[in-house]
Length: 278
Image 1 (cartoon, rainbow, N blue to C red):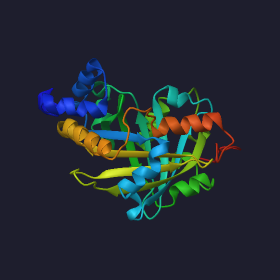
Image 2: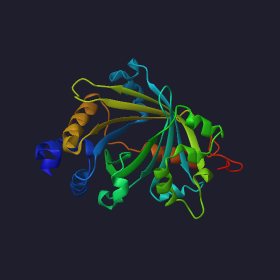
Image 3: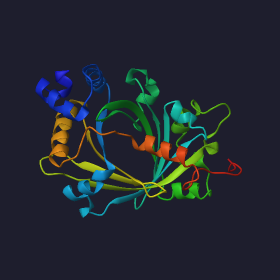
Image 4: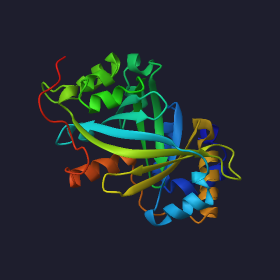
């Protein structure tokens, strides 16, 4: 454990961020030895959004603007099967899509998939919880997502052959990518900054849902070997600026699915009409 995360003292300091029972903490540390990277995430309480923007000067630079969509069956079967399907349109940059499996056991990921340069196996850790995922990504053209959402091209055009094969194993019966419902859009802005006393970049993602509600997530990435040191430093930075790590945490995916399940009429809740010709 020490070899993977640092000294016992560092692990204790990291625990102020992770806030996991001892058994879960040791299980997570063991898991990090098998992945490509660790991503530390913290969802800022709604009441502290303004404070976070001010103390970190988050809005001091122009953000990267994105429009995010999730795809699932109308009854959210993919999510229940541990599959996340997301596409993003980024202003001034290529669009992208991801098919993510979580939770996964790294040793159980198919060797052919594990060897793909487009696959990342990582542990996402936030205060009180963690999950291991395998994310298969592909880069798209700069207007591919907009074309698909405007129904000028089929949804399956947003995914590589490898992604489509992976997704097909989880779709129900004769289901097809083009039959999936679209949940979105969510307007997102991404800011990158380096707080004083922290030796790596933090990313702030502010997601705005169709009803105007917002989610603010701070995150940073680390190698498995540096995860504990990074978590300890991140905890110090957050607490120094008065951000409470003990409140409820909810991933962006979970927040999105909850939003559209509760209010399916909000925004663009899905595609209707005949499937595009393939």
